[in-house]
Length: 136
Image (cartoon, rainbow, N blue to C red; front, top):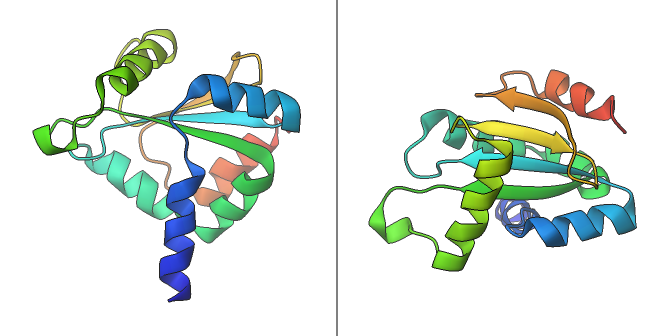
């Protein structure tokens, strides 16, 4: 039961509104981690979410240091986003992922300035967290 509750909490941590994340980052002196994902078609995206973003080590760090935003681009009709959410994700992609890479994870400051980008799956959670901590 505890594992299920922990997984459920992990799902609640990720937002989908960049302006809210930016406002929270300013108020709480946090960085923004923006993840571009294809949740129903991109194997490395699914693996990154499961192995890295849903890990207890990442979740513990993120709770106190990051505003998390996922810009998802599902392909299956049953997973399609609401038009307003799709428009928000498209705008984020135009600004931060114009080449359409998946997965792409972008670390931003509270002004929306790119600090670092990671392309693809991140096999080393400790290296990934260490790289984020360099900007804290």
